[in-house]
Image 1: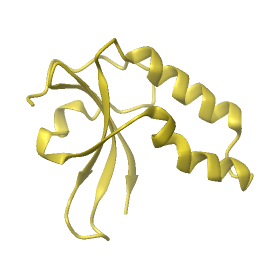
Image 2: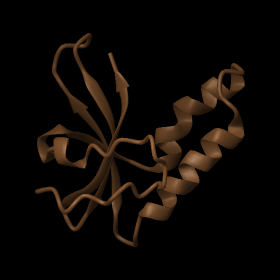
Image 3: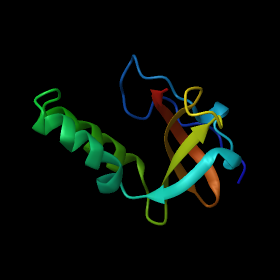
Length: 105
């Protein structure tokens, strides 16, 4: 899956980096729904570390990026547990059209 032309800051956030050019098809690990992807964030809400409205806003912005037939994927770079990074990628017609970094171990 080659990468497509990156979307220019599709979330509208001035401080969000677009990782599309760095994420390759080999890094895609598993297909997910946004509900599955944000399930872990819900635990942070329950613990009072993040507001539900912040999670909902983030998920809504991502939902707005997707078109019918698009799929969401988790991506991971690195094989050593303490030397990895990963995030979320949007795949359209077998091309990565947008990706973001969400974590670094």
